[in-house]
Length: 279
Image 1 (cartoon, helix red, strand yellow):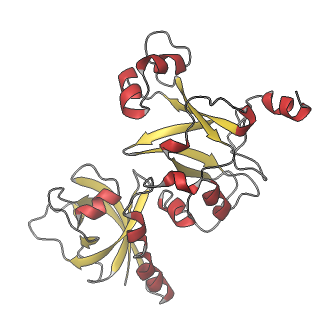
Image 2 (tube, rainbow, N blue to C red):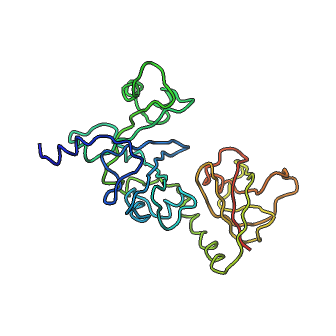
Image 3 (cartoon, helix red, strand yellow):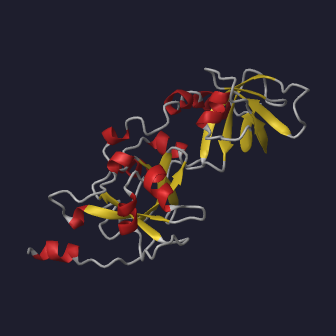
């Protein structure tokens, strides 16, 4: 065995929270953990010195705009130890070792059991694996799931995620909505004052719309604002087309089209949002 290969195969799992180093964004002894939300799997990348926003996005097969979409508040640079949420496409996960498998070319990917999880749910809902395979991949399996127990999902290539593996993985409405950001950028350039609010947003699932619009009582009509769903780490842009009807409950900050709500990841008819508008 070549000395370098032997060294890489014997690298211990250090448990460090950093992801990669100044030359590589993912190393074979990094351990990644998945979190699972509606329609997507996420992992956390912890920034180390030398990593840049552009290169980080490129490594994971994303544009910088898409990376910012999953990380509201992310600026044009990265800070040391900053945690960045990365969506992981199913096709990027190697679940079964191929005939030719080099351990140094992959980093392990795990999921930690949460309250309410079941073996059936892990098998059918999340990971599409036979139940027997789930049993084999659960750490210290003794017949019952335990909160915090690790489930081995598979491996990610230390070479990154090719862009082509993300076809359809980034929300199909993202690109269309991101074009609206130019309006907010114009307001900033013109020196308009920014106002911030937070509260409940209302939408009606049965009334779909092809437009990104909201009803709001204070933002200028025909202006555009930014809406963030902090529970889903999502933000979008929308046009103010009217005022909130008087029949609406008094606790409602805004009413939005269902297209806005879908892109924000809303499930309930009423959910919490944060907004920025300009005038």
